[in-house]
Image 1 (cartoon, one colour):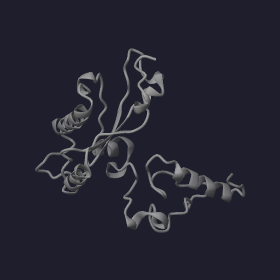
Image 2 (spheres, helix red, strand yellow; image 1 turned 30 degrees about the vertical axis):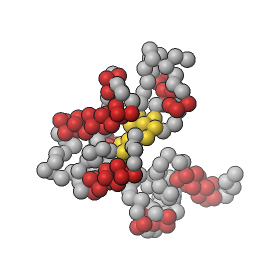
Image 3 (cartoon, helix red, strand yellow; image 1 turned 90 degrees about the vertical axis):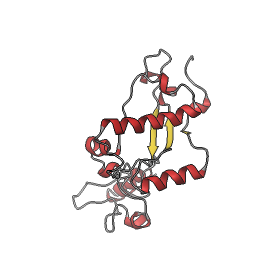
Image 4 (cartoon, rainbow, N blue to C red; image 1 turned 180 degrees about the horizontal axis):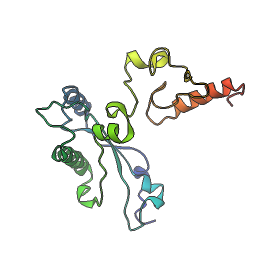
Length: 192
């Protein structure tokens, strides 16, 4: 129907032109500065689920923004400052506007969450949606840490199965499936 969008609106939309842009964003974040040109991934869930909107040609757009560090050089700003946060949001929308002119002007509501907000609202340590680094020191048998990779905890019947477990986050469902296999095994049932 009208405003339902095309096939190009049903997946993840990326807003970067070159690998250099991604490398620069990563370098800035590693220097405790929010990326000048952050890496942005957009999904538009209302294209698939019209109940998310009022039907008046509106859509819900979700932006996953990378290279906005939790720890920011204090000479640059901080996430507790609403003006600093808004300036970053404006920068993000400016990048989207380059690819989709008028995007910013079409927005009727915003819920922007900084890494600090993710920690304070959802308890995500340092705003990390993956519940920990995906470095060599914390993958496979060492995820979330050495001795805890089996999904089991010292409390019988309590298991770990989120993005903090192998193979990590990314909305794959793999940590949950891996945990389900362990739970079923513990119950003497096959995973089929």
